Length: 144
Image (cartoon, rainbow, N blue to C red; front, top):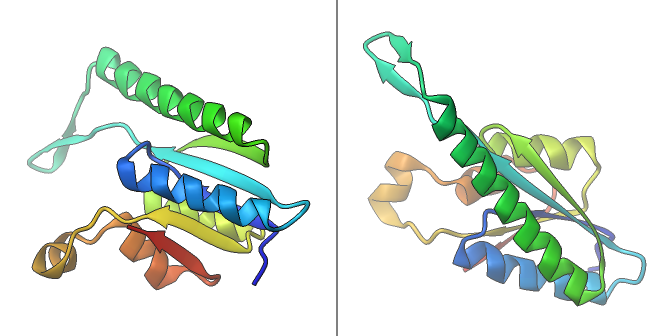
């Protein structure tokens, strides 16, 4: 099966770097394909009782700077691979952001790294890859 619009969920982790490698291989076997990389980030929130505690601006800036650095790493690796790509940084909950992007941009496949949780921990916590697999309307390739 060939995919022309490959959506890669990238967070800079070891698993997402492996997913990047697989997305590049998929793109290389399909002439004219494009890898659309999305890095979803969110700012931390602290709840105290029913209220939301303010987070210092410097902390939010650190999160944003890390997100930019992660995006630049992906751009560098993709440039070296000589495939067509587009990289976007989006603020929001990762699973929901990836699913919305896939729908809005008519992606053919989602490539995502697994963080390797299993059993009870995954059931209780859930994971981004698990949520994407459960709710995606297109094929999802989960890389371990």
